[in-house]
Image (cartoon, rainbow, N blue to C red; front, side, top):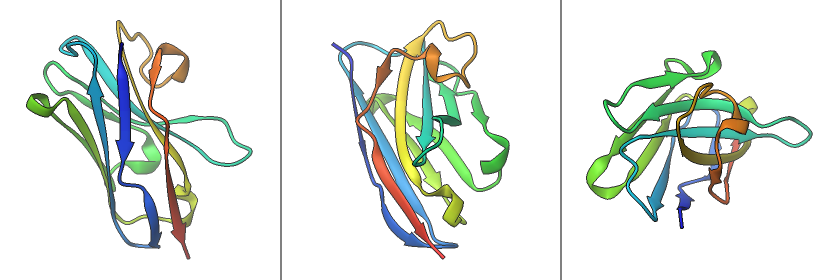
Length: 124
């Protein structure tokens, strides 16, 4: 059974940084894509970043390019999202998700496995 556990959310002032982690367990993930999504109140869940476990190719939403970095630790089955230069509009619940055979990695519908989410709040 695949399990994803996020950690690292919190409250930070604008311009600050947070580091989110997602620990995956339950099977091997060498063929998977791990994605980070976020959902603000009243808004749809949106793609933030993704990484291919094999090869490490990374993908970012335009609004986080240059500020967020996604990386993986194969030995620990952990994916990290380093978030710098945070803005109030980054406030949301952040979710990690994983699945194989992802066609459109920016679509939340492509992912079957999700973490419980972690709150990120950025004050102005």
